[in-house]
Length: 224
Ligand SMILES: C[S@@+](CC[C@H](N)C(=O)[O-])C[C@H]1O[C@@H](n2cnc3c(N)ncnc32)[C@H](O)[C@@H]1O
Image (tube, helix red, strand yellow):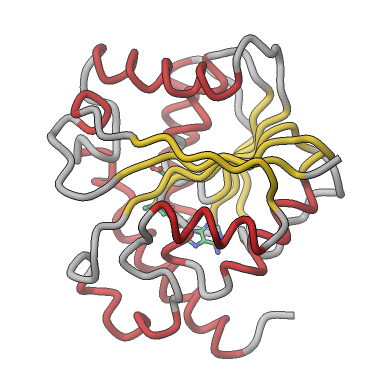
């Protein structure tokens, strides 16, 4: 059960992203800005899942649908969950324009509505830093993963200067500013994820710029 203070934090988080939804994709480290960048991300995601077909994929904190739409393009069955209605509206619009099918839904990454063991892959990009209860979130992500399924986090360590507008809730967000990869990997292991590995994502093509901070993918498994 969410505490009152956690609800207040989430309300602020939701308002923040509702307000940024229309322009979120304009930054090249958020949206896709060239065919070269598109190819680079397709290659990262293909390396992640190999040649497996039609996986059940959950994109938590899917925002404007960045990962969801790429996985749909690769032929997977994708659900995207986000707590910001406005971010989801952008995601749905993009899906319509590209004729891709994704089940985009309003929901809380820390309290999912899915049944246990539903997904082959649970993935997120850039959301763990904005959660008040990351342990609870990881427990939920493990719960909805099939035994042997993969959890993948695309994260970074960008420091505390970002998101000045989050000032009033910084202290309620344990991973605010991101985490170095070794710390996040250790956190996942402590929370029951096995066979973890880290891949740096420092290729400028991915972000449309030379990354100014460490960026990486950490992947692990739900044990059998
Ligand atoms: C930096 S954006 C990243 C969006 C997307 N994953 C991407 O890579 O472009 C963070 C997203 O996390 C969402 N978010 C934050 N807390 C959440 C929660 N508790 N449950 C679901 N979504 C959440 C926000 O609404 C926002 O869309």
